[in-house]
Picture 1 (cartoon, rainbow, N blue to C red):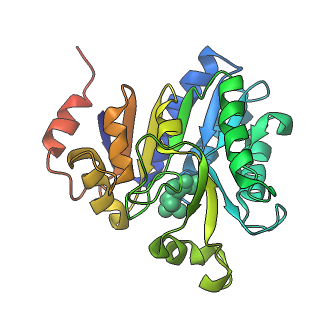
Picture 2: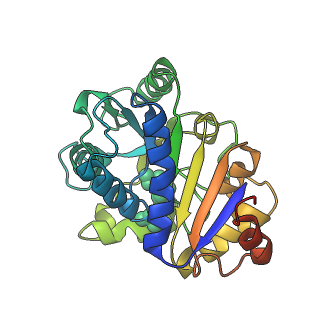
Picture 3: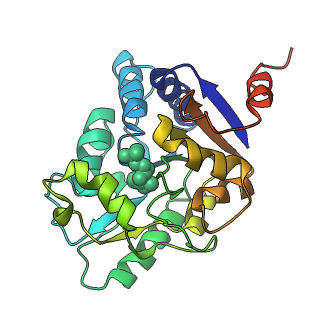
Length: 255
Ligand code: F6R
């Protein structure tokens, strides 16, 4: 795993955007794994600037979102269907037909989950997956005790996750209790993972994911199993890491 400690949230976003840009420049039909929440918004803004400058295009690319709430309509402003349409599809110029979000409204959620994994496989897999991390160490909505082998499925949101996401809703009572989320096993199949975290609220989770034991109690520790995982954090989110000297020296290019 590579750990990059950046001087600002903007630098975190730029660094992650650089990786996504490299993938899309090498293969304009690449499949990008996209996340919602606050953490990746700077990445999308940085990518949008590149699109506007004409240096990259997502017109032929595909995207798969990590997760979706169960129990709110697709046109709810906080459904991930709406958020991805606004923040990713429109801003970056994806073809809406090639942007996929799990169907949290399906009558048969288990079948929808299975179909989602099948759609990722049919698209040839995810080339680069953008990830945020919950303060409890979740990635996607794989809450603590999620299996490292898990596939896309229905999960119950942890109380802390609902509390954290209440800022997007009128009250915590409006935050859905369930979701469909790619599993840890699904996420680990992406060819490259880029996890970003900003702020001291994420510092414990980042340290546990990067330097702690592999444990289902910290779902993001699954990144330790991936051959191409990069964790890009600002100084505040890096505050509980112990090997910072090493990460900083390893970030210097080979001469
Ligand atoms: C969102 C997702 C979550 C978030 C995490 C952090 O699709 O899968 O894992 O990345 O909850 O959320 P923020 O970035 O809002 O702190």
